[in-house]
Length: 125
Image 1 (cartoon, one colour):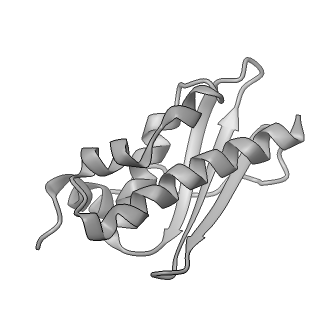
Image 2 (tube, one colour):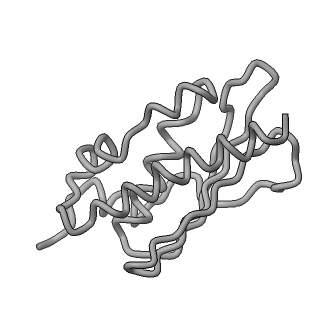
């Protein structure tokens, strides 16, 4: 079955690929992996003094669905409060990208990466 157009778009034109300095006190880094398929996802957030996420980036080694899930996650967290993004669910990402059931673990990685990045940021405060 071919990928949905949204997955192809985010795979061909991924948003926010890159890396921040993880030692920066305003940066939270989430590094997660899926043993089932070998995908690894690093998602980072940059937070301002008011607790708003002003920027986000990712590096993902994995399939098109994992890359698209990461790309969407970075778009969705920008402009939101650091605690507000804890409500982003993998099911919302999966629905947005029309992921088939066999690729749901990719959206779970993105949710886990967001939570791990927030946890890392909060540890620095």
